[in-house]
Every structure is written in C-alpha cells, then in structure tokens.
Length: 324
Image 1 (cartoon, rainbow, N blue to C red):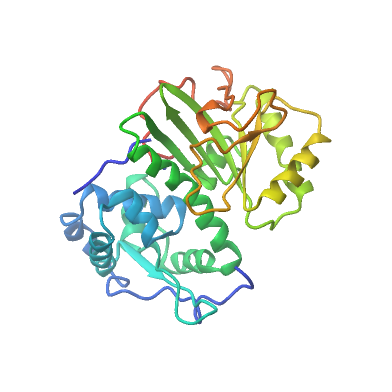
Image 2: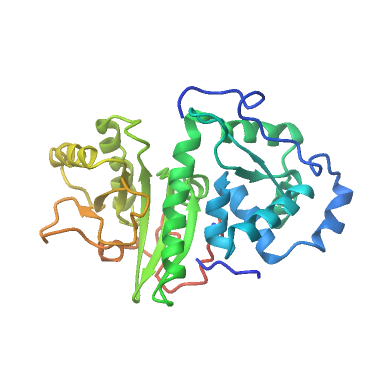
C-alpha cells in the first residue's frame, strides 16, 4: 500500500573492500531504461528514492518504520527496486563476526528520476560512486544514521498519535543550509506539530562525544546571529548520547551569555527514547522538570526577512521530503 508521508565508526574503511556498495543488476542502466521503469514505480517508491537522495542513507528498519507495515514487505519491495536500479545497498562487518544491517542509498535510476523531478542534471556514474563511498565511510555513517533516526522517530510517533501530531517538514543538512542561505548548518531542520502547536527546530546530533563541548557551544553563535538578522529563533536541540555529557554541556552553557535562540538538550541513551516526549532540558528554564518537544519556545523570523523560509505555521503544505 502506498503512503503519502506528510510534512524532505571508527577508522575510515575503503568502500571497495570491507564496506562495498554492491553493483545491482540495474546499476548499468541507460537513460533509455528510465521511461519503461517509471510505469512500475509507485508514489511510495518515488518517495523512498527522494528520501535517499536528500538524506543519504537509511537502514532497512528505518525505511520500514516510515513506508511499510511489515519488514518482510519492505525487504521484498526494496529487492525489486534494487533490481531496476532505483536503490542500492551496502553493509559493514561487525566486531563479533558477520555483517550489520543493510544500508540503502540512491541507485542510478533513482538519482536520474529525482534529479529530473527537480529540473537538475543527474550525477555521473563516477559522481554517484563517490557519493556512495562518502556515505559508507565509517567516520560519518553513525552520525548520519543517528541524525536520520531522530526525525524517523518523530515521524513514527506521529503515525501512532491518532492525528494529534505531525512531522510537517524535514530538511537535511544540505537543504537546510541552502534555505537559510548558508548562515547556519544544522544536522537537520524540521517543523513539528502537536495538539495545534507548531514549532521549528534545528538539530545538532552529537555522536558519542565526537566534538568537544566548546565547539558545541560555539555553534550557537551562528543561530543567534541569524535570529538577530530577522531569521527564526527556533530551539537548537543537542541530542546527546549520555547523561553526564548533557550535564557537562549545561555547565559549559552556564558560562555563555544567553542569546535570542532557545537551547535544549536531550539524551538518547535508550533505543526507545522518544524525542517528541518530555525529554528536553531547556537551558535557563524557570519551570521545574523537562519539557515535551512541542512545549519548547519557538519563533518564526520577521515576515520580510530573507532568512525566514516559513512565514507562519499555517502556510502551505510542508510535505516531508519537500526541499528547496
């Protein structure tokens, strides 16, 4: 069944050896094969391709959570899409032996179709191979998958909310940077709606303390400058891996002069942690306890500002997967 989705690790390992993107039977498709293939693609298939193009890489479990009702159905459909070259995949060895889950990336046909939908030139075969190599590189893979999981968890929560919540928009780092004219470069940006309240957010995903705390704090200067120039004052969310990391970050933030942009932290130390829930510690909060995501302060920028892509929370149909 096709769904319209509402709202767009250690040392580096060579992709050609231990972490290869396999060449599917559809990997040598010519442009002449695009039109016949289109007749067999559903809206869901095109959305999967769009997500992979925008967000880089998703695991089978992540794709299943958003687009399918069953892992078996997802596996069968993804296998067919790989055969025609819409998607491709790779996996990585794990320390105890064997391989981890399949990681899905855009295939040659998918890259051509998504580029055409945006009136862009498709990547060359060499450019697509380089993109796959970067995505499979172990030094970046965990960060990208963790970032994507944050937004997929929000979407999954919305799916089971009986219509009270919605991830109205999800922009990747690339799309967000472009839309905010490269003034900020969050790991992701979203509009989240719950019980008739819509907030914007900027995500900074912290991969097991990969960056020192001073660098995390310094990132806030760009967000404050954007807000002072008429852009939005959306909360900047630091999604951290451990409670002690969070406590130390709050100590560092206590020495910083507060700016116009709210800052909140949350900890994803358990797989079931729900980022929509009461997990956010707002810096300088006068209220006791943690807040739900929708309870965080959020303000759109000036309506006449070039740095305000969202004029009000009711403007337009922000489809998940829509980009610039």
